[in-house]
Length: 219
Image 1 (cartoon, rainbow, N blue to C red):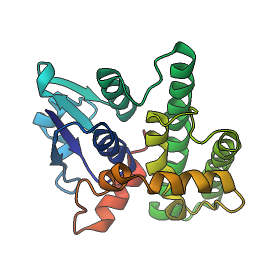
Image 2: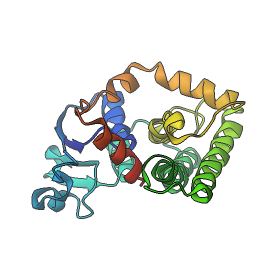
Image 3: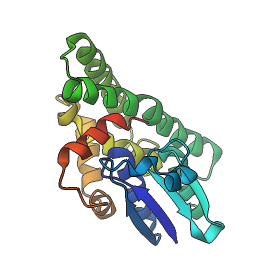
Image 4: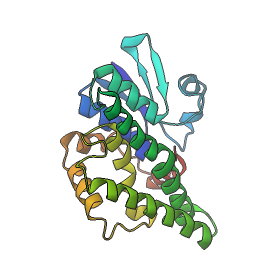
């Protein structure tokens, strides 16, 4: 049994989607940002960085894993699914996973901050992060012109990337002309496990809290 500590953010959705895809039993612990539950002493024992998502694998000696990319790798390796077994295929999947972790997440997260939340409209910062996010989308589009999924086969790289890219409108970043990326997004949206994972946890009544979390939790 997996305990999932999460919120309705792109990084949280990565893990709920992968758990749904793998069919693993799990219990959801939705953390409230307005109550600062992610900074509580009990949660800091699970994730010293005080951010979601995190899991505790009760079947493996209450083993805690934090950082969304590390969680995806752990669960994929544990089950032998969603990560190619051969060294080259595995490397390709991990390269695209790291592309999301080091590129899409930070850049789109900052686009959210400056476009949606920062008290001053700093157009230079808005332009910088929106343009860089669009450039990264173009990299994805070029890749997806040649393959159906980022690693060739469906993998944790797709699961990590989709919850972020689907929020392009909220970030103010167009996807016009990126036909391969749009095709991939439609394919991802059609997967039943993805649909279920995006509903976990249930949204709070305070949408501003949720959206603020999406902007600030950029890793």
